Length: 68
Image (tube, rainbow, N blue to C red):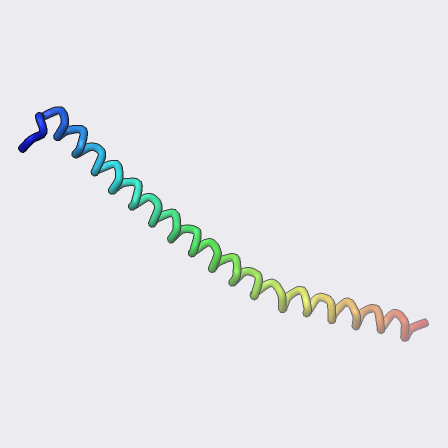
């Protein structure tokens, strides 16, 4: 009651801005968490493929050496 219309408007806009900022921060944190999880899954999926390729290369090299 002690604030005039302009002061009330400024206070309301400030509170709305703070709420929006908090929502944005939480959304960004969630997006980063999802991105981190996806990156970890990709790494786990890639590692066996690399190991399989190394094993296949070793077998091919051994076959070449055996022919000599």
